[in-house]
Length: 171
Image 1 (tube, rainbow, N blue to C red):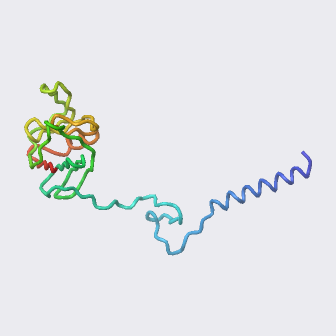
Image 2 (tube, one colour; image 1 turned 120 degrees about the vertical axis):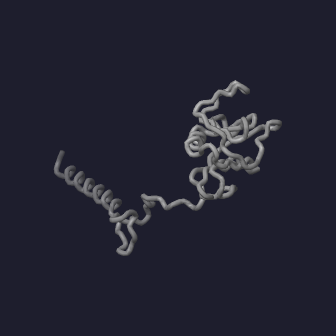
Image 3 (cartoon, helix red, strand yellow; image 1 turned 180 degrees about the horizontal axis):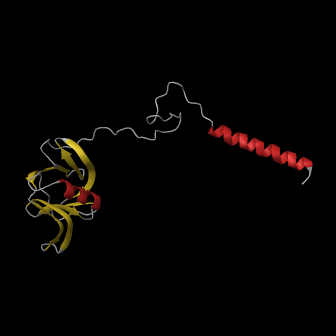
């Protein structure tokens, strides 16, 4: 390598380093609020700590611990009228096996229930209206009256509600 080649290579390397350094250099306005306590606010960069989401509402009364809306196939868990989980997707009874709307109370729950009526597994079952329960099931298909849920949704309902808690099912 001759002297001219070394000089050109050095100039190119220095220029590339300067361009890269300029890409990392950002000025911070003096009066900016920090993204986190003691941290910088960098313009053009989204916050690292997301803002709290807007208030989520559900169509049930403050008495409900579980709320299900059949028309939109959604379910929520509630605490004194405040949503603590959801909406989570659900499916419900098909024609001829409709899930009835109304206010019910949790009768019992079982982590693993076998339906002798339909010869089917009902994992994380929460019974709230006779033989109607929430449980894991394919939400793409309608049921024989039960509320089918994703595994995460069924487990959340199972863990949260207890016998005697109010279930509201709205059209």
